[in-house]
Amino acid sequence: MRALFTGALPRTVLTVLLALVMGGVIMQVSGKDALNAYQVLFNSAFGNERALANTLLAATPLIFTGLATLIAFRAGIFNVGVEGSLYVGAFTAAWVGFTFVDLPGVVLIALAFAAGGLVGGLWGLIPGYLKARLRVDEIVTTIMLNYVAIRFTDYLVTGPFFVPGMANAMSAEVTPQAQLPRLVERSQLNLSLVVALVVFLVVAFMLRRTTLGYEVKTIGSNPVFARWIGMPVSRTIMLVMSISGLIGGLAGAGQALGVNYRFVSGFSRGLGFDGIVIALLGRGSPVGVLLSALFLGALRNGASTMEMFTRIPRDLIDIVVALVIFFTAVEIGFNWLRRRRPTPDAVPPPGSAAEPEKEGVRGNA
Image (cartoon, rainbow, N blue to C red):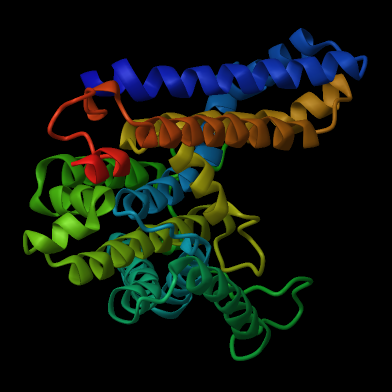
């Protein structure tokens, strides 16, 4: 925890502040009042109990997807397939919710989350197996599988599970006892936030206190060394991708049971890809992911109110998020260059035994 507050957290805060300042400059150049816009944004995100609840509602799926992406990143795997796990997990949870209607609420909700996570984990295992056993690039496979998951679930709700009379492609509504209870009145904030916080605690403990966490860190930093000391690299890669997919499936289950109460085609709008932003901004820390998800959730929640009262388009929020990604990428690039730069101690002094012989000296000898 101390390392977080002396390293990752200050850099994250600095990145956010730089992005907000640059966003404010863009507003001022456009003839808008940046301070007023940010005040409206803050009040609509944290001004009262309902505003805070809606911010937490927007942040909940981002906590899931950020943690799912973080685990893969810590193992050196650039997993961009959380979106696919999100879709298959959402449909599976919705299917459980409208199929097993005779089960009691607690059992049905637990079963729906477990099924959504299981199917999401199996979906993540596919690119994990291809990378671990066949050395197939995970970026290509996860991107392609995202589209497979989205189109396959579209087919399910327009074909075998089509509901006549619906304006949009969606499944049947889950039974009332499968709908997640709300935590705050006049808000859709629901029990999935509690599930997300439990997942956060489990991931933080796993990465810091377990053998698997040590293996993930070692494989991510030096896979060659990990193989030399006998770590099961291939098995760990498959396990990490399965866990990443499982958490993505839980995110989809939370949206299906707590927000939409059914599976809706195209419901995500990039929640899985937002997890990449959250993981990068969180600097590889579960606590950083939690704070970054809250920040992005506040931006998303307050964007519509800011647009209504200040006539500043909500697209500006996307610009701020893009600036966050830009400054984070710049920092990562500088850190990479700094690690590659030789230190003064690594250069042998003149005349030392480690200094390479010159051809002229060798020839005179």
